[in-house]
Length: 270
Ligand SMILES: C[S@@+](CC[C@H](N)C(=O)[O-])C[C@H]1O[C@@H](n2cnc3c(N)ncnc32)[C@H](O)[C@@H]1O
Image (cartoon, rainbow, N blue to C red; front, side, top):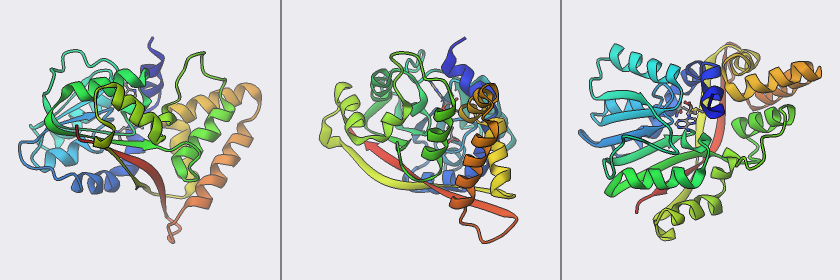
């Protein structure tokens, strides 16, 4: 089994994505999506950005390595009557069957960053955009003090070290690495720009309830809990995550949790 696929099929990322809907909509609103625009949402999950893009009239293909999330995306599109949005299984490192120069916009929000072989991923994204097209990436930033970078940092401290040669997904949050990868794919460095942006995780319930969602449904955190179980450190992991979520919660309501997280927004317009 491909470990990258196994990681994301392990849980049910849709349960996390439910908390990201408002930010998905808000991000898409900034992307100047017009009717008929051909959009590829790469590492789309169940459509946090694919669905809002389709609601604006784009022709959207969502590609994701996890079959359960592809099924969940197709189910959402069908329920919403969005015939212009379909989801299929695929690997961002090697998008077999996706023709060259077939999209006006490739959007990948915390998606392609998790695929192995980052140079191949950059080359694939460049391959499938038309001239005049754009690539928008959202990438978590290593050592950033906000939520997701800290979840991944805490989780990795409880998980066995990755195999030799593994390239951390977080390297996509470092501008010099991003530039190097797109330049290797043939994009002039001047066509790559960076900005800081925010995604907010909103849900009904307490910060501890949101920790439970990550514990039960988010592959990287599930793996950390499995490893912590073996090493007898579950209580420590749970406490570190609960302290983090409580400290970052911005909601003034006791029955709601709202946690913003900073990411690197990359725009490539070759
Ligand atoms: C953090 S989730 C984000 C999902 C979605 N973009 C969203 O914002 O809700 C990461 C997604 O990337 C997908 N993914 C991981 N590795 C991938 C790969 N090699 N090719 C395509 N998708 C991949 C996962 O299955 C998962 O859906």
